[in-house]
Length: 283
Image (tube, rainbow, N blue to C red):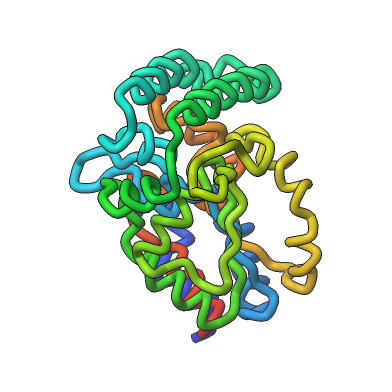
């Protein structure tokens, strides 16, 4: 049995929508063809691009919602209550706009810029330090998806690059991975990065705002990364949203997801499907 045949059997691609309510496939035949290309290319041709919040991390753990990288900071008892109240008020104003299906991405982009500009300004007022980031990430309810450690270590062992491209806070992403001993040599993080002074206190930001609706434009500032990976012509892209659609019913927007992704996982807090695909490519 070939690796692609074994993968088809494990994932049941022919009857996947009917038999696996958590897994939806846009076009089973097209997916099989793409998987065949990945398998034939092997590790040498492969790179992985992934979001962080609610993609590498869980959306829920034991029935409770998990924070994003922004949420780690905004829900931490280390942070001043004045900051928490301010960013909560900002969130409550802008988040309904972000997930409003009646607005186009073009209409949302300037509003998202306004949102994150206000949030950045609020964070600057706190005089947060690197030490505080380390402390809050050590005690956060944020959880990595089941199976991510094994996926991450296998990618490193096979020297397959993993680009973590996040609209969250890169300093939080980095510290979470470090605490789990999972910030590995094959990984690159592109995200919103805090600039620190010599004493480890916030003094600004290293890059322009990255949010969920400008990732394509933000990537253009990092073309050197892709130039270095030019021989790796096969890619697996993992994300959790188009904008961010979690607040509406899955059924209402499933079509939108399937227009963008080959495979959509519903209420799956694991890395089982990526691991299956990786196993087929590497074995």
